Length: 131
Image 1 (cartoon, rainbow, N blue to C red):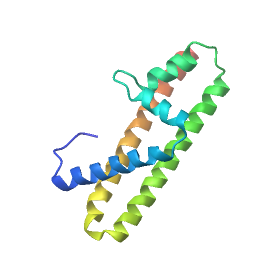
Image 2 (image 1 turned 60 degrees about the horizontal axis):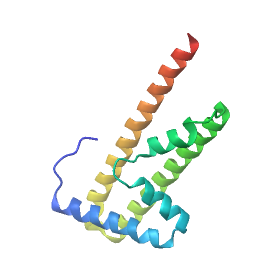
Image 3 (image 1 turned 135 degrees about the vertical axis):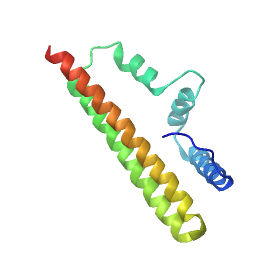
């Protein structure tokens, strides 16, 4: 999603979302919190983590498939959670309804783009394997 100049109300919403996520860390198990903190270090990405964790070993196609399915299920669940939260916030704060719906639609659009890229990557890999 292209970044557009954000208005003041969008910055306030982003701050609320960040603060909510930070508050949620209080309830996380220590090992989960340590994992997230290790991924937040400069120059570290989930892609790098997965390559180090799974790339060095011979992992079966079935295990990779299961990992991808679990990842997609987690993203779908997160999307449903965000959607439900937007719905509740919209009911209790009608003045913020359009802003939250706009942010949610940006999130959905971004997820569609990312999944399309993943599908294209799979197609390229399949073509290479067929040769």
